[in-house]
Image (tube, rainbow, N blue to C red; front, side, top):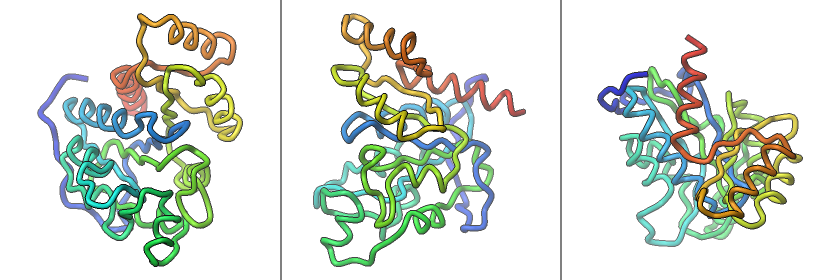
Length: 232
């Protein structure tokens, strides 16, 4: 697909708006594995390919006063407002899992169904990225974790971000067992071909465990562009 001028999502539609052509759930094996960085890099590349891209963070939590939130990073990548990425009432200034943060702040509990129902997309959106919080078994609502979010969201693809270093084989095996029968595309983040451990982890996960793997946001972007082309 040729490079085009970036397109900024406009005219955010209400809850009755059609879903994007392609919905990607971005999950992680744990917190701090780089989900937001990967999602932002992919969004930027897709946007520069001329597609209408939107990112959504159904709920987020962070240190009080932190302005460099996940929603802010994703908004910068997609050209949206941060409050379009994560609603103000789902932004919790307590560094705990979102339902725990809400409880600590004395705010009303919420469910996974609430988070899914609250997602709003711009008209004509080609790809919507939905980034979860924490690892796949981290609570994202009072009644469920990212696994339940994926089940109710019913995305076209799940991207599972993992750190390429020590411990990744165990982490991915546990996540794959939890996700089954969903088969994610694994993004090995921070992969360095110059490190023997990273190369061996990649080979083991691919050849012994049969994971569908990419080692960069660019490779994942290329995969998405091919999938979109196949749908046309």
